[in-house]
Image 1 (cartoon, rainbow, N blue to C red):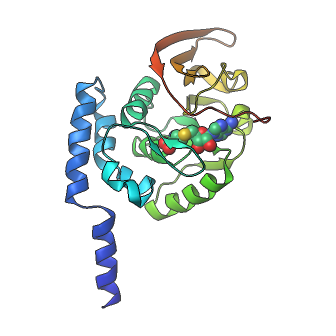
Image 2 (tube, helix red, strand yellow):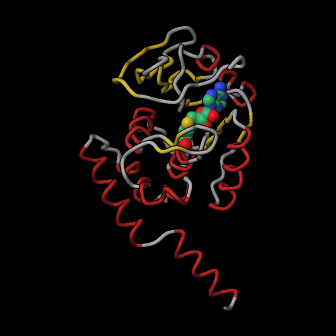
Length: 225
Ligand code: SAH
């Protein structure tokens, strides 16, 4: 077989009409569940979620549920990704810090929305595999750091938005300090289950806190974990 034929087959295997059709159905389900931001719906319709998970699970990629990824972690449920992103409401060109890169799916949604994305992952296996995937899919965060999300990125702060994609037992104080005035942080707070929380920085010392129901995330791990 010619090299170009093999290439063509690879492309067809990686994304195809079946997956595209399923993405369209998933996007319309999310609309019905209350995701009204058109750009977020477009991102769900466009980004091939099946490429962010183990090929053995591709058939489940467009069911609205969380799935396992390497190192006992999960790729969040599409509804949760869309809901958190809608709460964050990143505008094109805004500086957004993501904590918990994991599979890179949420990062690629932010990239699609034209955010300047900074993202941190503490698990080295995931950091390595997701770095490779970003290159392959041409997803270009401004910074992808292997490190502890509780610390944030002080040298790159302040941020317009911070999105935490692991369950934090408490409000991460360091991260609050890295928000611009008017900036917002979306973070699931709690141990067993988490309450989706949006914190807006109103002034240097004042923050507004709003809550948006219960969710279930893998834990945001501390140094001692
Ligand atoms: N946004 C991811 C969700 C992955 S699950 C996605 O779309 O796939 C949460 C991720 O947070 C895991 O990869 C986990 O390793 C990571 N994580 C947990 N504690 C962390 C910490 N303190 N700093 C950075 N990442 C952390």
